Image (cartoon, rainbow, N blue to C red; front, top):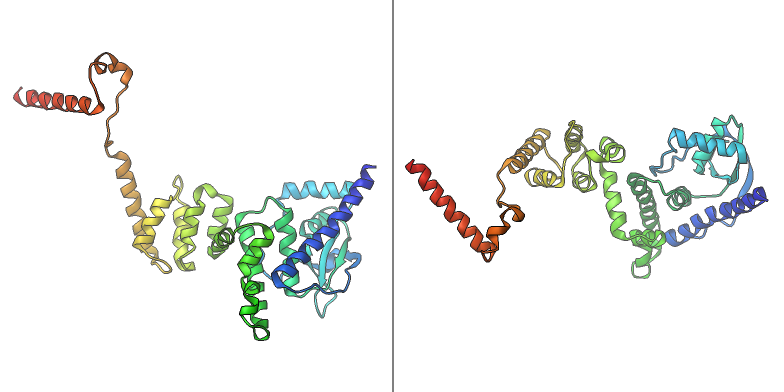
Length: 329
C-alpha cells in the first residue's frame, strides 16, 4: 500500500513540477507553452548535458546528501522523471530539472533514466530550471536564489526587447515590469529580489566566502562591496581572509566614504581599512564616558541622598578635595 501511495504522490508531483513552471512561464512571459505534449521515455545518461542556457547558480547536493539520495533511489526507484529538452542538431539533451537525480543515478551505476522531453524556447527552459528549484528546495543559498532570479529577469528583459515593436508601452506596462511579475509569482517583495540580485555582482571569491564562511563576511558588508568593480573587490577578498578578523559594517562604511565606488585603488582600500581598524581599537581601549557603581555597596549612604545628579556632584566635590590634598602633600 505504501508503494502504491508513493507512486500516486510521485505522479502528482511530476505533474505539478511542470505545471508550476508553465504557470510561471505564462505569468512572467505572458506566453502559452507549446501545445505539444511531453514525450516520456528512457534516456541514456551519457546523452545528457547539464543546464547551460543561463547561469542559474544551482549546485548539486553535498556528497553525503547525494549519496543518501542515491541510496533512496536504489531502494524506491525513480519516482519523478527528469525534464529535458533536445539540443538542436545533436542527439543529446539539456537537463532542465533533475540534476541531482541524474548524479544519483550515476552513483548507482544506472545506464538510463526516466525523462520527459519538452518543447521549450530559452525562456521556458530557464523558467523550468529555476522554478522547480526555487519552489521545491528550501536549502538554496542566497547566491543560488540571486542567480536564479537574475536569470529569469534577464530572460524576461530580452523577451521584452524582442517584442517591444509589436506593442505600445501603455498597453503592456505590467508586462515589462519584470521584477514585479517575478516577485508576485514567488510571493516575495521586489526589494528582496533586488537585494539578492545585487550580490551576484560580487566576484566568485567573495561569493564563495559569503556562502561558505559567512562569519567572515556578513550580508550588510557584502551588499556594499557589490558596488565596486571586480578589480576593486579583489582587495576585499584579502581583507576577509585575515585570520581572526571579521569586517563589520562600520569599517565597510568608512572604506566607502574614503574610497567611493565603483573604482578604488587596492592600496587605498587597504589604507582606509587600516585607518578604520585603528579608530575602532582606540575606541575599545579608551576609558568609558560613564562610571558605574554597584548600588548595593553604597546603599547605606545613598538612601540619605536624592537624585543621581546630587550623587554626582558630591563625588566630584570629593575628587576635587582629594586632588588638592594630594598636591599639598
